[in-house]
Image (cartoon, rainbow, N blue to C red; front, side):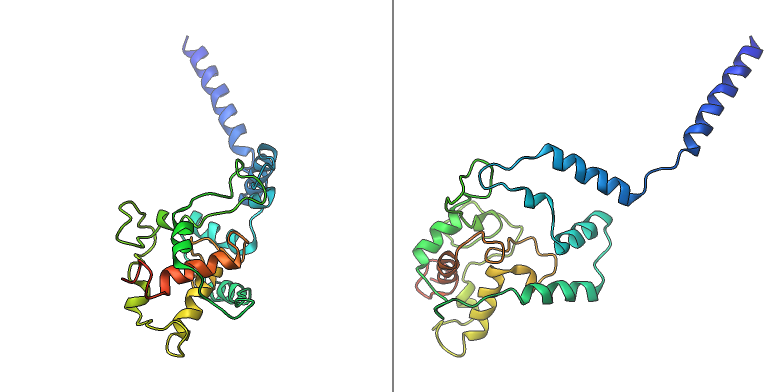
Length: 217
């Protein structure tokens, strides 16, 4: 009996040694395999396109930082911000503010960018999912800072004045491409990625900066 146990032990040991001798796949190989599995599992439908499973370089770098828990090298972060800053386009007609009432509708709407949303349908900003904006809204997210009194706190009495220009420019840029100011911002790049139209961004600008808006009263 002891001899049988000894032989079984040898067999188990040999199996374990064989398993240990098999080289583990590298991280790059695992990443490649993961991408292949994802690509086979998704299809284009409605507004959901396959480009979203092929992250751009900035998304890749930020995702890798999140995965490993290692902060981006400051030079890499600066390069990401510089690349995204270069994409920001000023309003085609030079006017930054639209109608704050329409801006509130856009901020409330979470429509868009899913496979059930038809191509060409209007997207919302879903702003309340991450921010407090007006006191009237009782349910809002806290992933982002409160935007209540956004313009008032920053002293924007007349959005067309020279004094307000730095805040107006920054707010426009933040809505257009948030990564211009924070390399791995989780805020959607509304203008850069075509999520919202120029007119929609103007309406959100008015919601945040118009002294008459519900945000600033």
